[in-house]
Amino acid sequence: VQLQASGGGSVQAGDSLRLSCAVSGRAPSGRLFNRYPMAWFRQAPGKERQFVAAISWSGGSTHVTDSVKGRFAVSRDHAKNTVDLQMNRLQPEDTAVYYCAADSVSPPNTPAQDMSTIPSNYQSWGQGTLVTVSS
Image 1: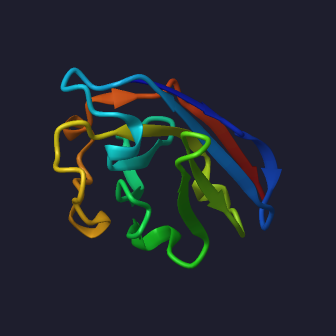
Image 2 (image 1 turned 45 degrees about the vertical axis):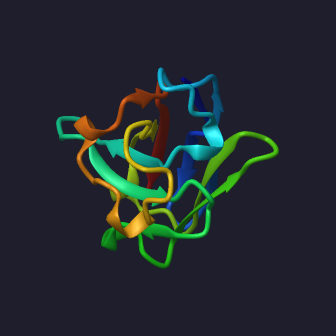
Image 3 (image 1 turned 135 degrees about the horizontal axis):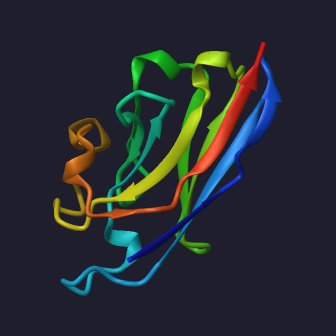
């Protein structure tokens, strides 16, 4: 599985950005993208990678961490094989490198609320895209 994240940039506090993760390939099991639960993580300078948002394979359930609730939303487009993270009302504390990740081991019908928030439980990662928010 190959993941390519894009859409990062430098913005002012209160602005919006939309990140996109393009997914291609199959898991060793042969599972296609549209059967992977997907997630976004972020890593600020000097800090550990932390969970941001998750979406089920169908896109029918989503989950975001409390610090971005009401501001960030995750979605997926099976026709385009992409997973997007819409980020609104950005704040300086949102500054980080954002990564998309695929879980090719958990059952495809895992609800987003039950997906892992631990980075090591995800098998495939994109290269990251930098988001910088200035006050």
